[in-house]
Image (cartoon, rainbow, N blue to C red; front, side, top):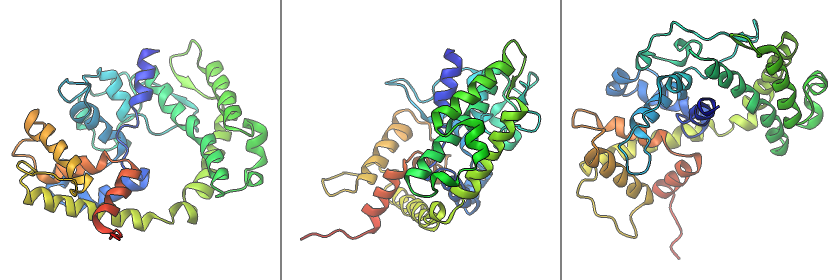
Amino acid sequence: EDFAEALGLAHDLGHAPFGHQGEKILKKIIDKTPCLKRMYPDFGHEIYGLRVVDKIAKCDREKPGLNLTWEVRDGIVSHCGEDFDTCKLIPDLNKNEDLESIPTGKEAGNPATLEGCIVRLIDKVAYCGKDIEDAIAAEIIKPNEVPESICEGLGRTNGKMVGTILRDIIEQSTDKDFVAISPKYGSLMHELIDFNINNIYHCDKSEGYNKQAERALTLLFEHLLEQIHIENRFENYNTTDLTPKVYKFLKEYCDEYCRKVEIYTDKDPDELIILDFIAGMTDTFAVRSFQELFVPQATV
């Protein structure tokens, strides 16, 4: 249980601001930045999550890196995807131990453990019904637009959906060497995901701010990269009450990781520091930083 909980808590630590759209934006930035392209040919939250837990995340006063077991690290890079055609996930017991050599999530394959397979399957279960509820609350869809087959088969609330599917997974997986969902509920889950994709994730209201998000992250990357060049990684930079907060946080980041513990050396490009810094932002902090740097504020 401890292993499964650790993996459940850690699996999405590599997410960028603005979710999957943020991943695409950072990938475009990498594609236009040769020094990053040589180091990271792609940006995916599952692969980047490994960098977060291995190199960046800290516990109290310890050095960066969480010293996680190989099995948890494997579960992080392998947590995306599902197989509702065969309705079962079989652990890959012959997996290559060099997880850092996996280029993208698609090449990660199945997790090597049953716990990893559970988290990979539950990852979809956990958000599909919740996304329905959130979309209704945000008035993206109306309750009566959810197909009746899904409501009758899985339930009309997220709690009912989760309970129905979990009972089925337990029944199908108990005393097995794989994790499974029955064809009946696997088909309903597939139908639910397809509905969400077409009516929630890619609808006009959900994607209405994609261009703004791309401009914001691109401008932040370019501007902060220029500043880190000018200020020599903020080594002798003095802050005041008028200093933008994003500069203060970037200075703290550089003080900690460039000088105190040196996860970045002189051989690492400044572009990598800024990529890591932006990838670790929340949506709110990214928006606030953009407003602080590029939007004039009233002074009287």
